[in-house]
Image (cartoon, rainbow, N blue to C red; front, side):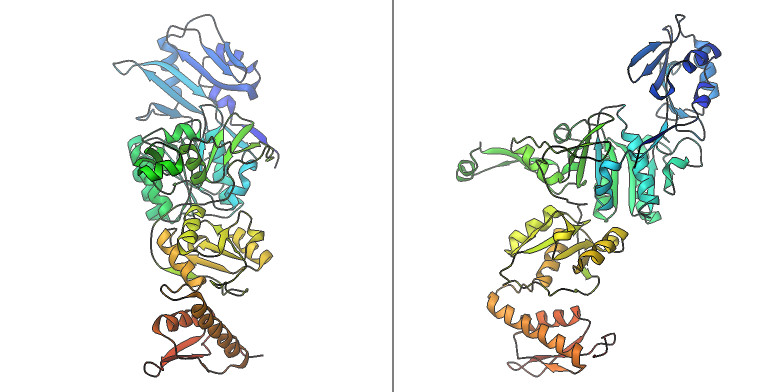
Length: 520
């Protein structure tokens, strides 16, 4: 998508200024104008993309500041005001007695197409954190991300707009956010509370929030992610490394803790005994460093990037430009997704491919959709399964997804293209991922693989016979854990299963279910 810039009623911003300043500003290239600075006792100044430009030799007076303040909306507790129906922002500087001694009039623009380089992350339901210095377009990209997710991906998007900078001043949101909804924040200190309120009251699929800057807001962001909601936000910081050193906001990327290793552990790692490591799963699956208005650095897997940083390895990330092209070789590969906590796996459409067996020789490839790839890899290692996660859905044998995202258009397209079975869980937690993978891979603790595989193959063959012939099939007597496994396999095929007989001859009978297909 080409980038189209629309200056939001620049004349309305110029209209609050004295006539001489308006005329001088109209002679400047409007697309380069960033802000107008009025400081008491100093000449007024326009700040352009190429640098500052003096507007007058005469200093700004108190009367000039007072007239501008009267012409704009009411200033809130964060000393910001706006012009209703526009994206312009006016910020005040006050003296110790509360009088206005300076104003910054920032030009607000809606810029379409700015998230083209991040379209893949948005499509795959990543939680994305934007970092960058002031003036590089973080809020502009945030606004466009909200519009694209709401309009192009038909997701329920709620914007938590603390200073009305994303959706503009006034009660009617600016058209630049599309069909996304906006919640205003009564006081800057209440941003974290409104974030939680948005999730609890309005059932969003996506929350968009600007300037996460306090521990309470970082905690609210984690709570939102743990509820399976995609989170798009910005934070104070210019790079991922910078953020990991910020004790207030490090939790957004997993947090950092200090651990003491044993002598053997330190020797094995080749490090000192005291080292830093990531404390937990990151709130944001991907981090984007905005270098300038043309260049981005994308860390597609926050967990791996942070782990590399803490080992002293600089993650270069993936350079991208405004055209969506990437350059260089990604130092940290892999798509992750939102992090989160606990119970009850639930399966979405019945598998169209054979269910992987724990004894299978072929490596099973798993694609994580809106789930933490880091957590999934950890569970695969713990269970010693012959499987790994992959970056591209097209290469996957099966897909693990968050139930709240199981009807996403992007996921449905992947299913149609690949035919891979999809398994869904309610929450993005290690416990639920472990339970689901035990089920999918037929893991029965305490029994050898050959015994488990034999029971699983018998149940699969019986289920297929029940589907084909429409008859009940009795299985071989098995121990309770294996009967439970066989029962799960029957349920997977939407068949009924019932234990019959007494130990040691107790066995399972599989029979057609109420919604089983008629035998052909």
